[in-house]
Length: 61
Image (cartoon, rainbow, N blue to C red; front, side, top):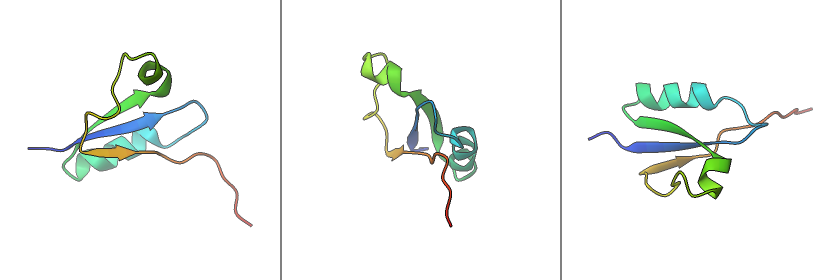
């Protein structure tokens, strides 16, 4: 059985599509969950085996 992976997407974050693809290649069952839908109760964040917070934009000196 493939573990369900919930990938949180919030405007301003990126790499959620690439993260979903990587989890799929690793044998997971990824789905991207929009934060606004979770807040409205239309999606659950807790119905998964793995919860992922993808990265945003950053700059390192």
